[in-house]
Structure formats: structure tokens, C-alpha cells
Length: 329
Length: 280
Image (cartoon, rainbow over all chains, first blue to last red; front, side, top):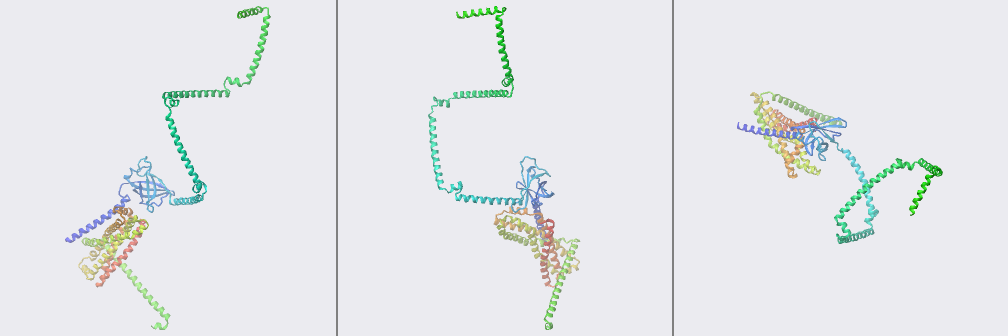
């Protein structure tokens, strides 16, 4: 009886441990597929599913946060991929995050990568749709690679030509590499440059010495360079000059406008200057006035000889003579 | 001789006919024997279900058998599983290193052990140990007429001896498979730890990342069927053992052979069905 009890105890331990191990394995597998934790559903629309399968991982910033739950074909270019992600990750993923399909390593299974956006949008909620980025498909990549290869071949060909020219001493660089005479000349030039720079250096030293020799207190240059009152005056002069130049400018603008108006035919002056009829009228008037004056002179002469007014004119002559006499005295 | 003397061609024809006829007769008799055995086994299985569902239930004997078949096989299954895991990893390493894919070792070993190697190796070990044991035990009981004595005394020998044993193997094998899998993975992890410097945590984490329910569930269901086959064949061979001491040996031997063959057949069918449901 005791033996049977011991056997039963051992059997019990065996069965319980075995079952617990099986349950743990199931839990670990299920947990990986987010079957037990709290999750929220989200989705994203892609043009190409790139071989993604149910149960593939969803990664956010490189961390597994969920799995693909359902793949729905809406039409020939729109595929909606439904995912479930851990509820605790909801507060990290924002609505402007971008989903893309990638693969886990070079030969790994496909997965969905969610990349954080700018971080200004609100957090995602259940049923939200993320923006998606359709990556370049393998075929497109191969096509691009093929084009790159062609370009690389062309480039290599050109490079070969360039290197051949260089070796043969063609062109400037070729001559630089191969022409020994040119190298000597270049060497000479550099030597000259060195000499010139040393000359410049000594010149600068002399200039410095000269500047040091300037009498800052008495000489004109010193006054100009050092005297602060003169500087202020100069500043004031410059300010006045500036004002004057402003005034001149205004004046010239006014003049310009006047001349403009004058040119455009506005005002009396322009009328006077440009109207030829008026000039003719003025000439006629002047002729008439001259004639009128002659006539008036004739009338005056006539009046002098007239018996009525003759006395008045004689009186005037006499007064004139008296004044002339006084002036002579 | 008379025929030879008459005509060599006629002799060849008639002799060939005779040989051919004998061949077909032998084939037919073997085929007939196979069909009869299959039919007998089916009836035996049907009787098992009939008796298993009908009270009274022999719980005490069931527990004893579970202990005998479960606990007593644990060491053998454990050591086999451990060595299988160890060897599988050691043998795969050079090839995976050549491909630069040695980091995929936990995925490969984990999936192969949980899906196939673990259940099949455990079942074969149990077929060798349990089916032969049951065949020999029941065979000797049949030979020494203990089964007949039980029938006379009013005890149902089928319920007491067969149902308890088949049920025990059916229930114990999946648990043995779990232990076998765990120790095989441990053996594999040990090699990776020593040779590749991979920590146990990383190894098991990678294994469980690689595993899916499509790996675990069909393997567990398959293990129940394996256990059922082992118990059924062992009991069938022992229960219908031929008279004589030689019959016991034959029963034990044929039980192992037949159980092993049927295991592979069931495995084949199980993979097909799992493929339909899970798209492996």
C-alpha cells in the first residue's frame, strides 16, 4: 500500500511537471503573438504586401510591439494590413508615425516597422490608421542596380581613358605628372613665391616701424589718427555733409519734377517757351506799340506847335534850362 | 525430369507457371494475412473504445500503468532526448558555420525538435520499451492462461489489462514528449553555450521566438496518437499471443516492429493534416 502511494506521488509529480512545462511553452509562444496581454487594433494601407504573413512581428523603433492580425485586399492596389499592438505602447506611438514593410535581416521573415513621426500629433487609439511608406521592391532595386552597373561600367571606361592620358602625359595633369621641365619650373615658381613672401614680410616689418615712428601728438597724421575732438568735428562735418547731400537730393528731385512738368507741357513758362503763336502775336504787339509810340511822338510835336498848349511846353523848356544851369554852377 | 526430357521450352513454360503460381499464392496468402491482421486490430481498437467508455473504470490499475509507462520511461526518454539535441547541434554546426548562419541554430534545432524529432524519437523509444513490455507481459499471461482464469473468475481481462494500458500510454506519451523536447533543447543549448558562447537565456528566447502554435499543437496532438498506437499494438500482440514460450517472444518482437511502422504511418498522416490546417 505504501509502495502504491509513493508510486502515485511520483506519477502525480511527473504529470504535473509535464503539464506545467507544456502550459509554459504554450504561454511563451502565445505571449510572443500577443494573445494574452491587452492589445489595441490598428491598421495601415500598403500598395504591396511584400509577402507579409499573419503573425509576423510589428516593430516600433526596433522593439517588437505587436503582430499582424489580418491582411485585407481592398482592391488591386490597396491592401489593408490589420495589426494588434500592446496597449502599453499606445502612449509612445503617435498618429504621425509611419509604417513600412521590411525584413528581419537578409534572410529573415518579413515584418512591419513603425517609425516615429515628428512627435507633434496625438497618441494613436484603437482602430487608427497609420501612414505607410511603400519601400522599393526587390525587382525595382535590381533594376536600379542594373542601371548603376551600366553607369559604373561607363565611368570605369572614362576613368581608364583618363588614367591612360595621365600616363602618356597628355593634358595639364598629365604634363604635371610627367613633364620634368615643368616640375623644375614649378619648383622655381615656388622658390620665387617664397622669396616674394619673405620680401613682403620684411616690408610689413618696415611699415610697422614707420607707423611706430609717427609723432602722434604733433604731426598731421598723428592728429588725424589720435585726436578725439578732431574726430568728433570730422564726424559732425560728415553729418552735415550727409544732411546737405539729402537736401541736394531733395532739391534735385524737385528740379527734376519741375523739369519733367516743364517737358510735359505744364505751366506758363512752358507755354511761353513752346507756343509759337504767342511769339508771333507778341512781335505784332511790339510792332504796334513802336508804331503807337511814333504816332504819339508825332501827336506830341503837334501839340507843341498848337497855340493852346504851346505855352506849357515853353514853360517846361525854361525850367529844364534853369536846372541845367544850376547843375553847371 | 520427364518434362525436361520431352521438350526444354515446355519445361520452362510449365516450371515458370508453377513458380509464378506459387509466388502469387504466397503473395495472396500474405496479403490475406495482412488484411486479417488489420481487421483484427481494428476490431481490437473498436472494442477498446467500447470498453473504455463503459463503467466500471479501473482507476487504480490505470494509475499503476501510468506510473510504469510514464515515470519508468522518463530516464530513457530524457537521456535519449538530451543526446539527440546535443548531436543534432554538433552535426549541424559546421554546415551552418559554412553558410554563416550559426545564429539560426536555435531556430532550426528548436523547430525540428518540437515539430518532429522530439515526438518521433520519444515514440520510438516507448515503442521499444513499452510495446515490447506489454506484448511480453500480456503474451505470457495468455500463455500461462492467466487471462482465461480472469475470464472464468468474472473479471473482464480486456478492461483490466488492455484498456488501462492503452489509456496509460495515450496519456503518458505527450508528457514524455514534453520532457524529451525540453532535455533535447537543453542539450542543444549546452553545445551552443560551450562552443558558440550563446547564453541559455538568449538560446531559449530565440527558440520560443521561432516557435509558433502551428509547431506545438500538431506535435502534441500527434503524441496522443503515438501513445495510443504503442499501447494498442502492444496489447493486441500480447492479447492474441500464440501458445508456447516462443509465442511470447514473437509477440514482443512483432509488437515493436508493427508499432514502429504504424508510428511512421501516423506521423505521415499527421503532417498532411497539420499542413492542411496550418499551412506549414
